[in-house]
Amino acid sequence: MTGLALKVIHYPHPTLRHVSKPLKRVDRELRDMVAQMFELMYTHEGVGLAANQVDLPYRVFIANPTGDASKKDQEYVFINPVIKSGKGQVAGEEGCLSIPGVVGEVIRKEKVQIEAYSLAGEMFSGELDGLFARIVQHEIDHLDGVLFIDRLSPGQLADVRDELEEFEIDFQSKRDVGEMPTDELIARRLVELETLRA
Ligand code: CO
Image (cartoon, rainbow, N blue to C red; front, side, top):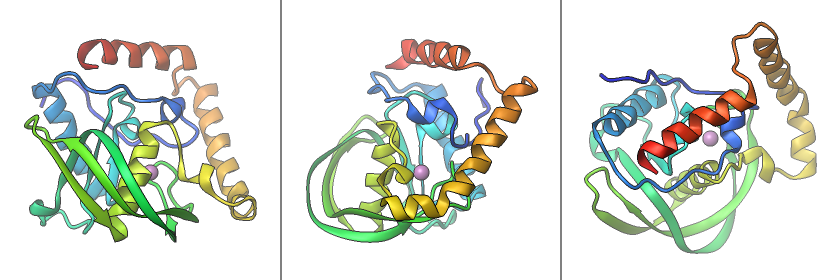
C-alpha cells in the first residue's frame, strides 16, 4: 500500500460536485486507489463507486453489479467512460454510498452503449441494460458532479428533504470543530492530484 488512505465522503462534501478530469496515466498508486475503492464498496455493501466519492478528482468508477466480493469476474473498472448512445426510459429506485439511507426513484435510459478504458489501458465497449445500465449512468453522473437526488421529482425530493438536512447539519458540525477542511483546501488538494495524473 502506498500514500493515500481513502474513505467514502458524504453529501454535501464539495468533491461530490467536482467535475472529474480524464486520466492521462495509470500508475501503481492509482491501481492501489482502485483496489481500496473495491474494498470500500464491499464494506458499505454497494454495487458501484465513483472516484469523487473517495475524494479523488479522476474520471474513474468501479462496479460489481452482483455486489458479491467473491465474484471477481463481475468486477469492472471504467476509466474515462463515455456513454455513446442510449435508448428507452425506465424508472427505478436508487441509493448512494455518499447519502446512506436515502433512496428515491430515478428515471434512466433503459439501455446504454458505453466506451471506456480498463486499468490495463485497453479500450472496451458494450451495450448494457438492467441494473448494470443504471449503475453506469449513476456513476458517470458522479463524475460530472451530479447526484441522484438532483434527478428526483419535486415530490420525491420533498420526501427526503429532512434526511438531507441531517447530512448538511453533520457536515457543518465537522467544519465547526475543524474535522472538515475548508472548501479552499479541499479544492487545492484536488488540483494537486489532477496535476499528477489528469
Ligand atoms: Co452514488
